[in-house]
Length: 126
Image (cartoon, rainbow, N blue to C red):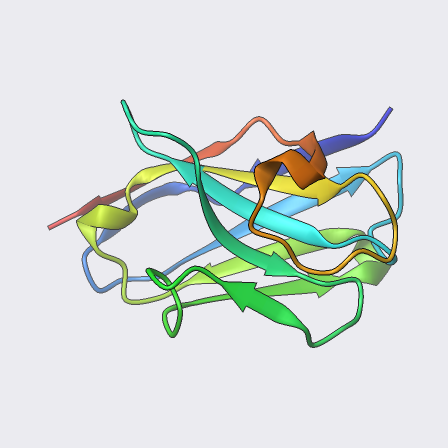
C-alpha cells in the first residue's frame, strides 16, 4: 500500500554531484518526517539526513553536513537528496524512509521509520 521508490543513483566522479529522488505512493508525505540512510557493502546502515513534516527543518549526519541537502515537494509526494562534493566514502546503497507516525520530529534512528524504499546505488570514483 505504502511504497517508496528511490531513483537517481549512479556513477559520479569525486567532487561531483548527484540528486536522488524518493517518490512515495499510498500515503501523503506532507505530515510525515522523511529520512535518508545509506549502507556500504559489509557495513551497517547509517543515517544520512532527515527532513521534518514542518518545512525548513532538517537534520544531517556530521559526515555529510555542508555537502548534502534534503528537500521535499509535497505536491508531488517526493523527497530529494542533493549530494555535492562527493567522495569515494559516499559510495553506498541509499535508502529513503518514512516515519510511521505523523507530526514526529527529525530522527537518526532507523527503528523510528516504518516504510522503506528498495535503495539506489551510488558509486563515487576517485
